[in-house]
Length: 213
Ligand code: SF4
Image 1 (tube, rainbow, N blue to C red):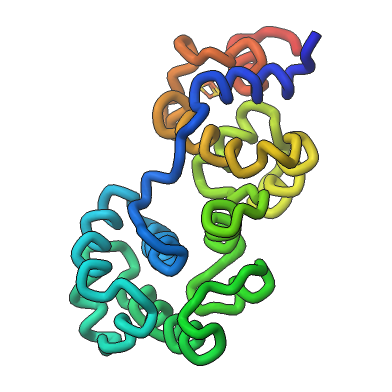
Image 2: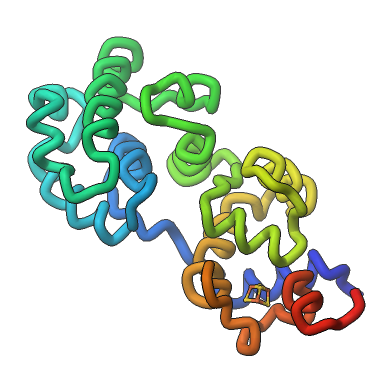
């Protein structure tokens, strides 16, 4: 007999196994830049912008050929583009000067880069470095707290509880499963609870339905 958490993980895995980030990139550097750009923006919008940007400026050294204003013009359809352009140019300088244009391999080093918070660092670590991590974005936060995989009012505590509740070997994949479940079914405003395959294990649904848990 599975616990609720085991059952949730098992069902999510059966539905979303093999799902990946929808950001498009060819290198760890490009993933980092796409992840920085994705804050307050959609992956679809970021992919439109980076298709051209990475075509002309695929590496940190290439991107330093741009001034902040040049970069702003390339990314101006993305939210917070002025701040992001400055962060990206400053981050590229550090990557070139301190890491020979490569991406550092630890969270401590990654979060020192301008524009890189814990979530972005975890995305890079799990996807590019194969280091198990759970990046808590808006979908992961909402879905995991509705389900009862976590019970927290902030992203750091949610991440800690998810790491406790989910087996380490599934951390990186589970992050994608929760994102895709949030996009497709557990939507922010109107979650599709009636067709959700894990509704019988979901705290939010059980409470909404008035079922004792
Ligand atoms: S039952 Fe509703 S709230 Fe719970 S995970 Fe499914 S869609 Fe989200």
